[in-house]
Image (cartoon, rainbow, N blue to C red):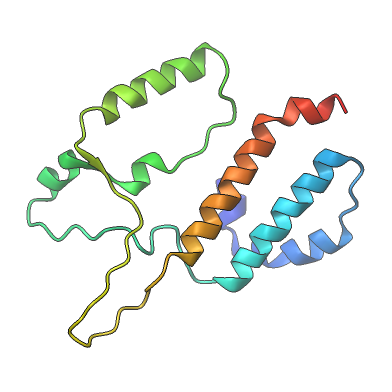
Length: 149
């Protein structure tokens, strides 16, 4: 799935695919809605990355910084199912690992008061992206509910 999402050609063809997509039920409609929001995000922020406002590690000792906080690349992930012993085992392992850290990195905006400009000065992209990911997770989590309709 990751290869398909990161393939720029698939993203560029998304609008054409959405225009020809016909919803057959409520689940299809929700999927199309999420895809349209993803297209709007891609169109509005074509060159952005989820890590564009990740905190910069300015310390000299990268190993020390890595042990103190959980980097965004470690906790932004996707899992297909949150039920069963496999998920419970993975969740326990991750929680045990993350309990060793003192903090979690989050998207951060830096504001300079010395007159120098910074490229990113808001979290609009991240807000939209995380809301979209929440919608996708909710849709997939409740997939069985749509199956019975």
